[in-house]
Length: 215
Image 1: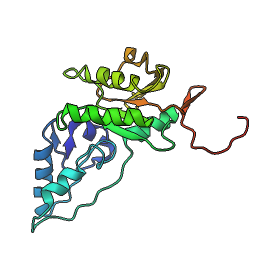
Image 2: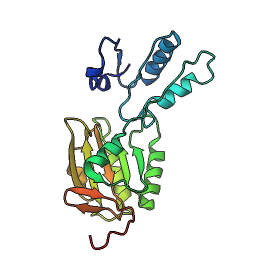
Image 3: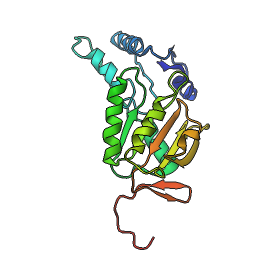
Image 4: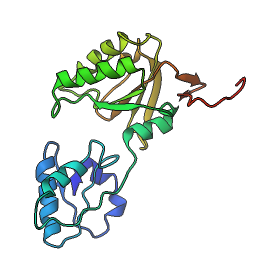
């Protein structure tokens, strides 16, 4: 069970299994249906993108199952988040402390997101922005850039990775001043580096602090 594009990405694993697709914004129904099937004795795999516990369905499933006398056994299988997949493609921009923030305000009020961005921009942490832009949500990434510009230099490295770890992956490295000119969509993540970031050839690195001599 899962959102249709996620299921299609693992067609080679379907075999003779029953496949149940669902649409965006049907997450609660999807999780309830999965729990109901599991209570009836079926083996159910609820597929998420990245890691089920990072902007996925793990928390919702646990909330819905909590307190039920008939809650089925639940196993949460770890995955690779978009932030980590993008970082691997870029080099090592998240080597030390970092944060991830979703710019989607469907479930979190926008003013709370802005407060988090403000705090993180001040903290000089690398920040990975999820859900940076969609057809109905084009200005949030512009506001996020403005917040970062209040606390970080315009030449701070910024990277955009789209469809990380897929055949359609694309990545570009720019800076805080110019990155909005890049193609950014719902499958993209935006990596805003901290002040210690280094561009080594075509790779981004956040040094962890090891002594490396004159390199």
